[in-house]
Length: 215
Image (cartoon, rainbow, N blue to C red; front, side):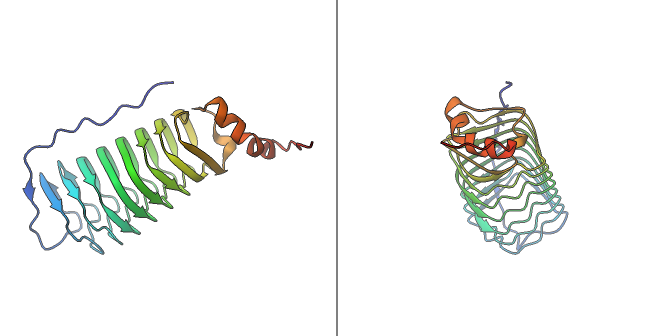
């Protein structure tokens, strides 16, 4: 089991973002978005490099195919944020409150998601490499058809996970605070779980294998 590599961020001195809004295919370098209301804005295809978004509202924000590199997102909140097909590399996401975030087809590499709560996270057909979920709550996250390599879940609460069609390699679930798999338990090959988790998953595994368990 190879451990995930954490992002190592050293942001340069940042300038305050003073623009009126985002632009599709825009280029944002070395900027700090502090408490900025970005709800409903269209930054599809934009590039964020060495940026910090702190306390920003991201409701219905469109960032499909965007590139977020060497950046920090702290205390962001929003429902329906669209990051489909985006690239996140060397990113730290802390204390987020998000719902229905669309990351299907996205590529995440050296990403750390720490604290907060994310409901109905859509990571279908996404690629996750060197990603750490730490101390967060994930409600019904969808990893259907995704590829996970060197992914760790540390002190996380995982509710209703969908792993249908997913491919796992060096995925460490042992330190998850709670693990509930709704679909795709047969895709756990390539993951490591604890003995306690094995006992908790036994009914689901038995059902998947067609084993009747009777007293």
